[in-house]
Image (cartoon, rainbow, N blue to C red; front, side):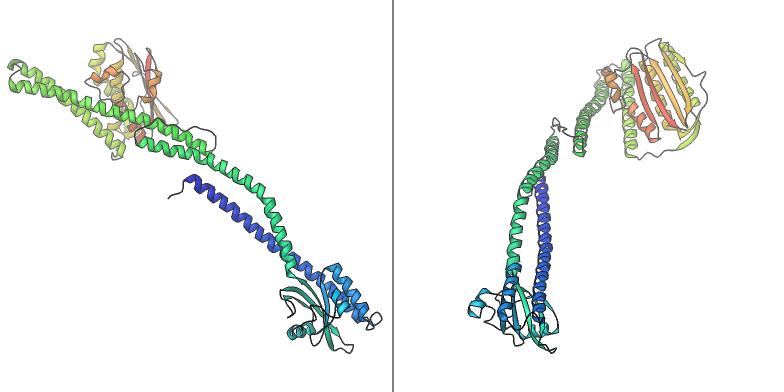
Length: 472
């Protein structure tokens, strides 16, 4: 079974903390063990040195083993070590144990010190961990040789301490460490749990929302509870969801619009042709109705052509063919082509006579399509006897073209969607034979492909201004 992200994150973090604390404890134990061992060897060395000095001082020690025992016994109790002297055969001749004074023997005298140890002691001081063939368990051992007075080896002084005492101390310290670490460890686990839950909850909600969106439910939103990266991700996710909702609406609108745009002329064409074939339409009226069918065919052709252009521009298949041309001349040509419609509606044109020529390097045919669409819309949506004005200037190696028309204008709430596919501000335009709802979308795509921008400003019942910016 796959672990959820929350469990993975929590268990991984907890495991890292446990491993870190365990490693820290091991390092502390190792360091403290070395410190205690060094301290114990130092104590053993001082005890051995003290006894060797006493034995070597002929004025102080004259063979009185009883006095030497009391000194060794005192050193043993103060330092908490065992001190004894072994002869060169390995036999213990005097020990600091209390039993030695009472019975002349102890646990150390029951066995001989190994000859290997004595040979090493004869060569110099010893510092090791071993049993000396006397103890059952390892002891810390320090030893120094004794001279027989003639420079010969007569034995050695040994000082030992059980390793178990240090182990017990380390065990106690480990327990104290665990007890002292338990409370912060519990607090840390609760903190990690809370932090992990806080971090993974938005991701869990996003996962659930994504699954819901895959089923067509776009109603889920992620609560934004912080301003960090997770919060930013939640904001982005919500924005993406809103965009998907809008795109889904556009998709449905797209399908509906395309269906409508295709169905209406096809129904008209089919009806008129059937009427001609079956004789419902009289012969003297056939030409008239066939003319209407021809107009509908051309409308279908324009729609298909627009959709093909849109598809090419979106896929990047359209290759630009830039050339240097006079933008003012292009604009004048397009306005002149609309002269009959302009005169019929009694529109006033301004700005062309004072406009300076501006040369721009771009794909002339595509820019012609953009300008034609803007001029066509301006003529179409300007009230009769209204006004259309043009402005053209250069600024910072850019050409700025503006076209303003009086009329109904565009509601402020509709402005963000003007350049979307099949979007129509005036829903009644669906019946407009010349409108496909793709013109402004294609215009924006063309301008953007040239590295420029297109924008719109409008005030209802007053004016609408489209601004095109192109690099020179």
